[in-house]
Image 1 (cartoon, rainbow, N blue to C red):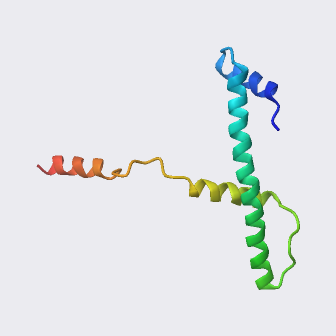
Image 2: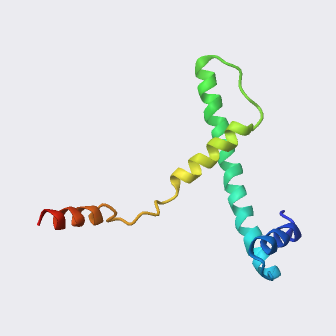
Image 3: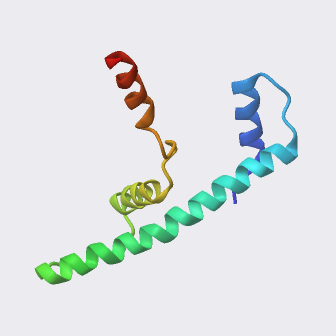
Length: 101
């Protein structure tokens, strides 16, 4: 879906290094996968919006718009696991204990 050459050019411009085609295809594949997730989630967002509109007696939307895409991206980002360690607060607690002692 994504053309490899503009991606390769951008990678080369940003890094100043030579870029293998395989690396470009890997990056393109990753983003195609992400786009698929966003597109499918945007359909769900449109359905949610239409359910709310139906309850309120408003017209139903037929097209996926910018807001559906924005909400889909937000929803997918919220579903991702946090990058913080499970014991993230313990570092601060240890510092407090040392200051008290």
